[in-house]
Length: 169
Image 1 (spheres, one colour):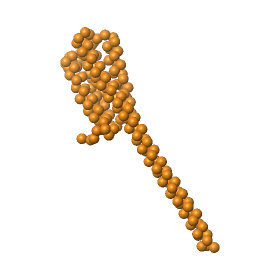
Image 2: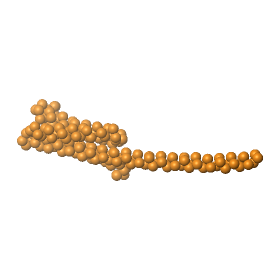
Image 3: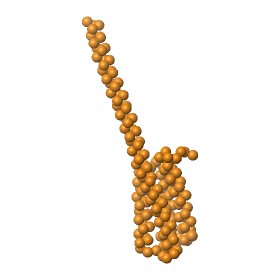
């Protein structure tokens, strides 16, 4: 009788252990698939954010350049001010989004771009109002605006590395 009970218990126990092992394997497989999907979604979210941030930062830089050229050539009109402020606003929105999504390596570069663009914007607005700060001239504002392109390039490289588009140097 003991042998029969042991045999039945062993058979039932083996089936139960096999079922539990199979459930664990399925659970691990589901977790791996979820992790892969989460990583893919996260990369897609970062890619979209980076594309928009790069575009809006470039447009803000271009708008600053255009504004400076208008100040030299004919003077600035209300529509010109609106265009510059719209470019600044779009960049601010994208930068705010990047602050919540981008890793620190990208965010450091994006922050440098943001600071550089805002410094140039401040210079341009002070020059426009006729109250430049010490050493601020149209030439110094143009140089500062031109230097933002290097910061933009560094930001773009960091974003591409984060997305795995460009290898690490």
